Length: 345
Image (cartoon, rainbow, N blue to C red):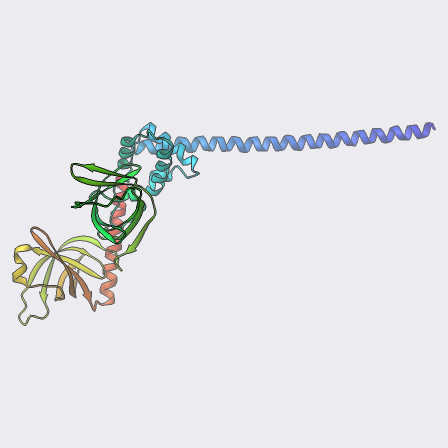
């Protein structure tokens, strides 16, 4: 009996020791896990503080105020976006500002405009597509379509929530309040855009009829040209191919792509040169030291007060010349992008 008790006590003692060791091991593991989690949290906190400090430093260098920096940081985090992108990418900036505006009815519009200007987001170059109705420039003309009716319109004003389209020369406008309308406009050197929206209000101001439409990002973009186009300012020597004794016409090249060129002459020379739509021309000009001799056909004519410009489509252009112009256009676009980048710091 004593031996049994001794054996039982010995077993119990051994079991208690094993349980104690297991519990001690579990405690050590839990302690190490807690330490590990604490280290990760600490590192994450330190990193977040460092990134926030760096963000504020970068934003300060761009001339932004403390108020707008706080807004960009707070609402970037709220919509789970990288705050640094709001300083470099216009679309990210606008997304963050939209969140701020939607949550704050008394938003500071002047602060937003000033900040947009400092970051260089107040202007979209012609070679950069529009991403929001906020990007449409004031006085952009277009046409409004509603129930098979068409009205000329122009962007009269805009704020952070709405755009205001002026109906041009409309004597008896239809009641469009609460109606969905479509506006189509051509952005020069870019594309044709189509936007749809609901007219939330109609403003009558000194005989003007102005439609209030909320901003949005859903715009359809239709590519207008096959090739990208850049502005130039170079002399062009041209002559009409069909003339037996062709005269040399001196013109100014205003923009060019691998598909064509726009040249302009003084308005008072129109009758003497006799260029019309369909006229085939030979042109000589120089781009960055390379002399080009190309043929083309006039496809459109635009008249202004003092000048008249001809849109010319190249005909039978050599692959080498086309490649050279493409390279020139890309190079000039890259320079424009760098200028824009330098502008925003």
